[in-house]
Length: 130
Image (cartoon, rainbow, N blue to C red; front, side, top):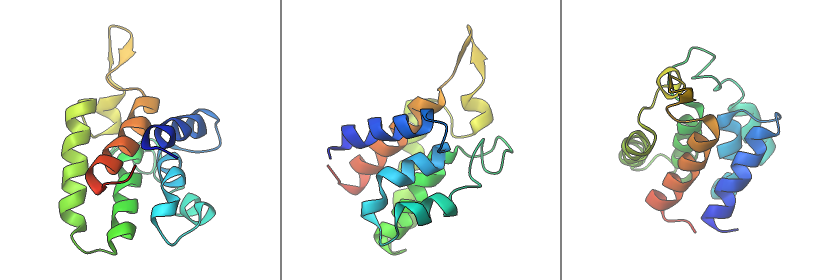
């Protein structure tokens, strides 16, 4: 599966109603870890609507960070997480769910679907997966 296909699958999972943003991102990147999609879905269940429904850090961004930690086995993860976060902010305009959902001209700054798509794409670009 290409990186673009992963990103679109993550959007489909998110819009299906069965996955939150963090779960959708980790599901399509599960093969980058030693955990199953089901295990990752359980781990990321609380990272929706900005980490526990507090409108804080975007769940899609958290999901990408979790996979980065698992893929790197914790070695150099901080550097990758920072790069993911900075690139995400550049593309989406913010990193907090509340800010991403702020309405301007009737549209959110960055809809959840775009956050999920961008998190997967950015992860792949920074950690070098196709």
